[in-house]
Image 1: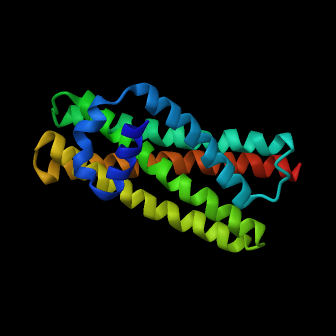
Image 2: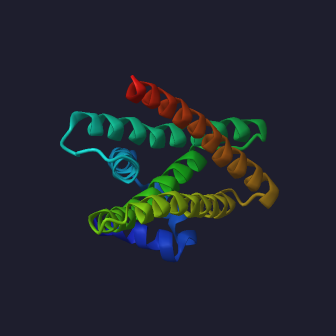
Amino acid sequence: MNENLDLFKKVITHPSQTVDKIQEKSWKLFVILLIGNCLLMGITYGICHFIVDIFVGVFWLLVVGFGLLLLIYLGSFLGIYFGVAKILKEKEIGKSLKLLGFYMICAFTLYHFVAIILIIVFITSHNSYLAVSFYDLSHLVLLFWIVALSVQGIQLLKKESEIRTLIKVFSSIFGAYTITTIVYLVLGALLATLVVR
């Protein structure tokens, strides 16, 4: 437990020291954090963007639906990275995928730890506009933090040229962002048609 807490601290203070630590981590920790973050993402999105009673079943349907966006985003990110790394003939891609997956899920975990508290404070103090603004802007900051962690981590792990690293990370993260945005718009359109009916 203390090792995991130390990992989270290092992701903030000394991310360069986490590369070897992540390679030792079990995938079980990753799966547990992924499930928790999917739920938290769905909950934070739901309470920020919809006026719905949390005890109503439709709210939890929204939670699951929008929580799955994180799963789609992560899967797209790792899938695109794998494809680009194959094209660029990277060796031992599995190590890179593990590092990137853990960096993304650690960043989301730390983000949700702070975000859920602030969003609840904003909502309970009747500042819904602040909650929505914080949610949207903070995700942009989170995106760039993940890019920075990923580039630095892959650079240290592979010790390759910066250009190759940037090509792989940027194409992966923005490709995943595009895919997730399309899915989000389709879900939004379906939700709108259900509400109109």
